[in-house]
Image (tube, rainbow, N blue to C red; front, side, top):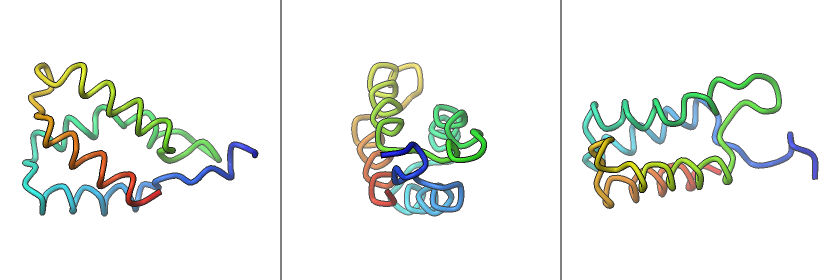
Length: 88
């Protein structure tokens, strides 16, 4: 399968997932940290633009390893993961 055919969360879909995260209790500062972690994937150009399943898994793993530094709980990370994977 070619790279451009992988399901990805687009910028618009990411914005929708952010709204879902807000509605599920994540506050602005935590969502900003999530945006910072995923910024590179959302900033890619062309067919690489967007967040694919592998990038979501890598971001979740990073957040789990750095949750203290990021001030995220296991529940927060679960909400982020669910919100993003739902849009793949």
